[in-house]
Amino acid sequence: MKQRESGLPFDDIRNLATNLPAMDADARTHTHGQLEKVDTVFSDICLWYSQCSGRSPAIHRPALTLFAGTHAVENRLDANQDSEKLLEMVTEISAGSAFINRLCHQHDVGLKVFDLALQIPVDDISEKAALDEKSCAGTIAFGMEAIAGGADLLCVAALESRPTLSSLAIISFLSGSDIGSLVELRGETSSQERDAVEQALEMVKGHQSNSLEVLRRLGGRETAAICGAILAARSQHIPVLIDGCSALAAAMVLNALEPGSLDHVRFAQRPGNEALSLVVDQTNIKTIIDTNLCSNAEEGVLSAAGIVKSACLLIQGRP
Image: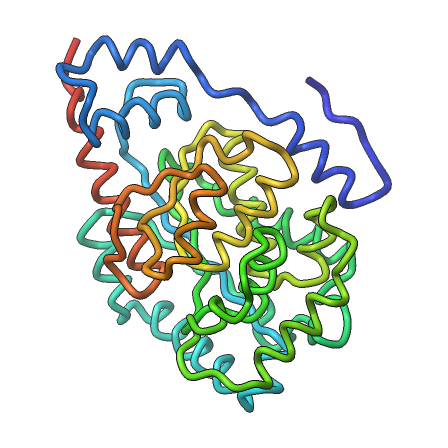
């Protein structure tokens, strides 16, 4: 179906989400017939991969894309500590000396890191909207570059030292979860952090039916970019693995925007936090690893990729 043009940035995103290709039932049926057993976790992964990709499960070009963005509200509350830590993480990965570099080499996974204007944080969500509509839609479009160069399994996460107040605010608002139990994920927290999120939630009231507006008001660039990566992967029939709070926030935005838009997505590992685990279940996204294996999203999503690659070997070489 041809997409209509629009002068409104979010209308184009909505149109893209509405016209995502359907899952391939025929490919799933074909793979089902190749499997010796169909009641195992590996066989379930094979069937999911086939209906996402439209072909027999075989992974040759997996890719990991990490998005990094900064937030004015975090900088105000922690004297730029999170931003400085994030810059160190980006620098270490770019130099090839981080643990994630070694994991990618071990699993033969391509790695991209997108620095989303780290020196220009999104606005303080406790005082005003994080982004304007044009900037938010533009960042979603930029996130679509995650599939540039091709991939047959896309792993996506935000690079962050701990869950951002932004992602927790989106999760709380769209799921109805208590923000107090979510903010605890950040470790030692101050009353200022909780107050900041509660102020942000007050300013987004009345927009429950418009998830892109929620993203614009509460989201960081990394969350918007992950939305774009997920949409682009679906348009090219690429299965997606996600992990972390920012990726979960992005998934919730898309799930509210268009039911079925996450059928090609699986969560890498089940969150250790009970509230977050319930939110994952709300999105109907299955998990690859049914426990919390890694503390960092980038490590979790890559570990899950190794399992998906192994599962796809079940029927490789079969007629």
